[in-house]
Length: 229
Image (cartoon, rainbow, N blue to C red; front, top):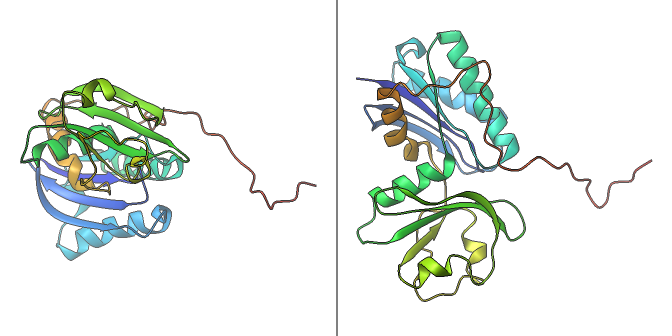
């Protein structure tokens, strides 16, 4: 009866759940933007307090490792690693896009392919492609979306484009088999199937050396109105 804390901070959503054997018990999340540093530990404390639970009851801590927001990923992974150190519990990580693809596939009522998209600024997205079994057809990549994106799949399959990067791609991906009515936000609730599978297989991370999956190197930018002296 594995009890797992799931942490999702790869986008603007700050989300935590407690799940048992892959089933949701409790959830707390907000869509208010990148306020993870202020909210994440508070959400975790409140989730346990409100449900009369203690952190040491956990069997593992799971975190969405990316790709996604650099800041969000750093905060989520840091908190997860800190909990694992303090509680002496194993750390589980799952790919942010894979959790989205798996969740969409499990909840779809029709046969199609699933293309989760996480916004990576301008017309670029972090994306991958999954079938109705949640199996990866196109690996995770950073893509600048053009009109022929996934055309080799769209010609023969209906594809659901979803996530916080999908909306801006509507004007580019206009194929008749493209649809955009899937979930926009990420959620720790999407993680539960994969985290419990990994727990049962004992696929744990090395807490000392684990780092987020950034996909691209961070490039610092200077605001246009900033004066350099």
